[in-house]
Each structure stands twice: as C-alpha cells, then as structure tokens.
Image 1 (tube, each protein chain N blue to C red):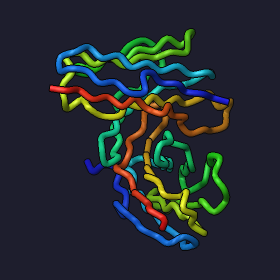
Image 2 (image 1 turned 90 degrees about the vertical axis):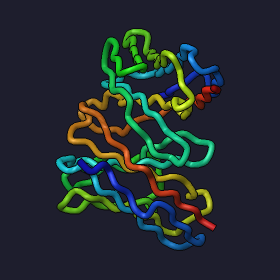
Image 3 (image 1 turned 90 degrees about the horizontal axis):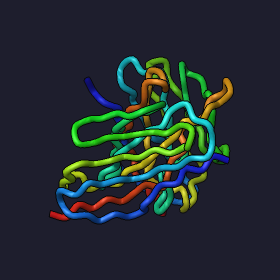
Image 4 (image 1 turned 30 degrees about the vertical axis):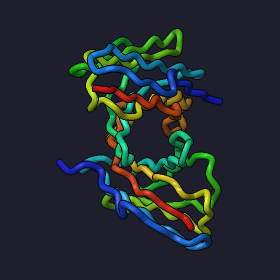
Length: 112
Length: 112
C-alpha cells in the first residue's frame, strides 16, 4: 500500500522566513507533484518532478528518488503563501493506471 | 485559455438522492480525473476517464459512477447519497499524465 507522509502537518512562520515542507513515500513512483490549495478549495499545481530540482520564483522543489523523499522550499515567505501544500505521487503502475496518491497536506500560515 | 471548469460550485442534496457533478477539461486534454476530499481527510482518487472510457477507479462503491462525453467533458454521478459523501469533489485534466495535471476549483457537495 502506498503511503505518502508529509511533515509538518501545521506550520506558522513569520514573513520573510525560509520554509521547508517534507514529503516521504513508500513505493516506486513515476512522478511527484506539489500542489497548493487555498481556502475555498481550488488547487494549483506547483511542480511535477521525477528527478533533481525545479525552481519557480521563490519556490524550489527537490526530489531524491533513492530515498523516496521530496522537499518544497519557500524563500522570503509572504502572507500570500498561506495555504495548504499537498504532496502527491503517481505510482508505477506496471502498464495499468493509477491516480495520484495524496499526502494529508501541510497547513502553512505566514504572519506579517 | 480556459482552465478546468466544474459545475455547480455548491450542491446541497438530501440523503438518498442522486447528485450529478460536471467537469470540462482544458481544450486538448483527453483525460479527466475525479477526486474526493472529505473533511479532515486527504484527497482520494475516484475515477479516471480517457478517450471516453473508464480507465481506472479508486476504492469507492459502485454508486459512484460517471462518464466521459465525446467532447471529453465528464460527469460524476453519486447515487443513494449518504451523509459521509459530503465533500469537495475535484476534477483534473491532463493531455498526458507525464506532463502534469490541471485542477478545477471543485464542487462542494453537502448531503443533509
């Protein structure tokens, strides 16, 4: 059974701080996604990774396939970064098809 | 380019009734995925449609069903509604899952 664990579950930080959210998973995957969910429910896809590192603005995502671990970093955090960040993995399906398996999310609050 | 659109935004139904939720994918996307996010729980994979066919379903009872139309839009039907079906239902589309997903804003279903 594929498990996706995120840490921390909740994180409150001050504006400007460097933020790290971690994601660990238990099975082989073909891709890992980082998603952002704002109050109201809409989800934005931030990154899709299968190896290495990606950067977009103040957001950086890394993945270590051997260790089955990924991190999402936010530099110079801002109150508008306050949201739930969700890690999701696409398991290898051996020719079949599976949907994403999601972590429970990290609830981030950035205080001014 | 229009994003993934879902309707209705909110839906209130009585236990035992049927609910129909709709999703229009991004133009050119042939795959539609449905997910359930119940209160306090992470996102759960429900159904995957591609080219008009159901390709896979998650661990949900048969009263959760759907279809995909020739224009790639999709319906999710939930029969014999139960109180625990109250959740945010999210639709995502992709042209190729190796290139990522785009999520809609969701339909919030409340069963009373």
